[in-house]
Amino acid sequence: MSQHSRSKLTSGKKVTLGVSVLAASGLAVGLLVTPSATAGGTGAAEALERSEAAAADASAAKAAAPKARSLADSTADVTVVSGITVDGGDSARVGTTNTQTITVKWAISGGSKLYGSHASLWRGTDRDSGLKQFITSEQFDAGTDPCVPAGDATYNCTATFKIDPRSTLTNEDAGAWKLRLWAITDATTDVDTDNAKTWYLKRWSRLSNNAAPEPVAKGKTITITGKLERANWDTHAYAGYTQQTVRLQERSLTGSYATTSSHITGTGSLAGVEKQTRTATTDRCYRYKFEGTSTTPPVTATGDCVDVR
Image (tube, rainbow, N blue to C red; front, side):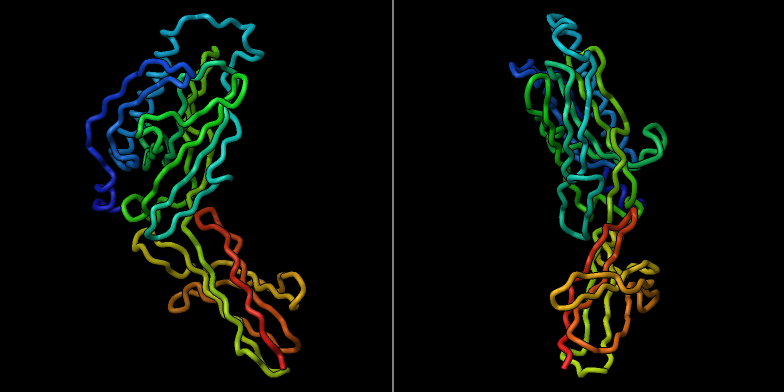
């Protein structure tokens, strides 16, 4: 990432963290946070420190609380985090200019009182020397709790993250990220992990498709042209995605699409372009489909039907 790009990600603001008075619900930890939600470079380390300090505050609140709970209060004296999803699965996609909201959900069980829980998104080899990006949630930065009671000693949590590709991302940020998550309850054992889930941040993709001419005389040639593009976070524009496999699919006017052939997208002046021909025999619909990669989501073009006369 360029020096200019990274400089936009460092807030350099002073941060104060503290434990609020415990609320009756047990969703207890209050955070007074003033920094930017997104940080890279030096700012990433600062954002990580804020997350760790908040977890320490929650642990301190737990240690200071009356020890009224006994082992009989819970069938398992261990805090358990489950059901972690990123945008409903294991990936999120961001385009070229619009700020994207990424939603992370998780569930907590095993403790009757929750002192605090937060999730953060980060990229790098390790948090000590290889930290590239660290993004805290809107809830964390606002000092609000992401979790609500969902039953006996269970909580459902939702955290949202705003990512502006113009100020936050470059192409090197596409690919595998990790989810840091901590949860402090009155159970004996808590959760504090740097990699609760590996997920993938992807460059938004789009795929055009056109079958021509329309209409066409029987026996003549139909040309099906498509172009696979993806978001470029360095230039904030879409560019052809070269040397990628796309599948040409066909169907009758009332049938279902099926793959008839696979092809590699072009390079150079034809970057991302694919062009195939078919002989017109009967009315038929055509489309291209891309299965996706670790940095780019799958996409299917809108079908184009040709009237054969």
